[in-house]
Length: 513
Image (cartoon, rainbow, N blue to C red; front, side):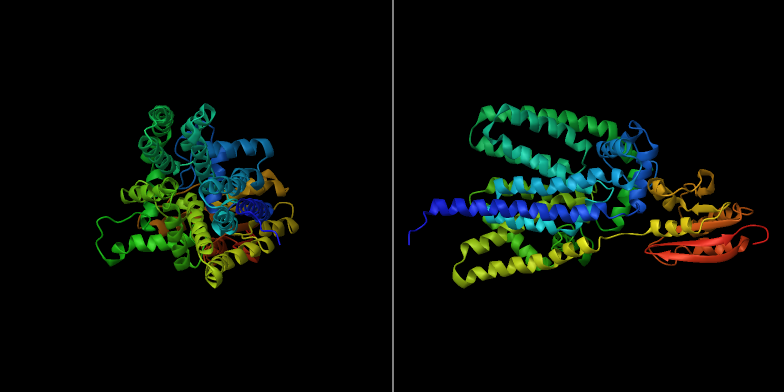
């Protein structure tokens, strides 16, 4: 039997890996598409973003947001607003940008990893990315985190293309770097990692011509980042929204406590490191994932130190920012790191398979199987049963089916914001629904003030006849405040429940009360 030449065998293997990679991309796209097309009303945080996009002008979106305690890059919000203007005020239109970003993450993960990793490492890493639950979920939610991951991978890919020093690649990298912060906050960590790695590499090679070209690229970046800071960041951080957003993360232990004051704070780096593999990495066997990650670091440290640096430096810089309380190192805010974590884990498993012989190869195969099993099953379940926060639409469907002339629909503030984007499904008269106004209650009297506000709202419904009060909730007890207050001024007539949502019917007419 004729022997296959090693080079030909390697080409055949690389070709098989290429086909496997594109098959994984298609399967990952299918999971994300199912999650996207499954109808879900906007939930609380999404509804806040959606209301800002709907009510604020393009100019206003450069500054602090009106609804919610959230912040988001202005060009991300602009892109979502353009989508709504083009395709209508509905959930699919406003979630289109995160969805496109989710698909881009798959493709860009392949383009980056095939330049950095071995052929097998590329395929395994891409498989991890495809089934990562957090990347899947955020590709179908109106939040910026999926776009963070896509923009960061795009910058890495563009940076890898400038190694030959061609002018078009350098120009593309310069322009992308100037615009990227307007789409993604954490991109600054990626850009800093790219700049540090590139400058050290070309300076070590004494390629001074390339150094001068890269300095010009970074000068363009500096201009873009400076404008971004003075136009957007400074205004947002000076606002109550920016400060409240940071305070929320401080409660979630998203900032590295330095100096540590107790054992929990001493263990913070270890706990955070291990949790990172589960969320945002999506690998639930965190100990094995950490082992694979460290093996991947070892693999790249042999001959590919530059690439290892470009993957690890963003973590280091994000941790420094966390210690300075400038950026939270917490689950969704580091979703952009997930593909980087998974690339190193994939390369680590590939190294174990590649460098071992005989039965020992099975250890690497078994490691991959253990790591992919639960995330894979979870992704498969998402195809059959997509995730949802609440089913406001189900209770509104019930209201529409049982609607009578003269009825009124009352929505508390957050469900009212979500209703902006699901209103297209219904034919309720414009004058027949009421949305509670925005109110913020701070301090120790918050529960008392909220109760007074709800009482005022319910009292204002007197004389309106049949009123449907539709609420969404995280805990089943949350709608109780509205029900208890409404019963003071009306007659209770029934209720209908769905996942995370309920509608109560009351008669507020004089005879009903």
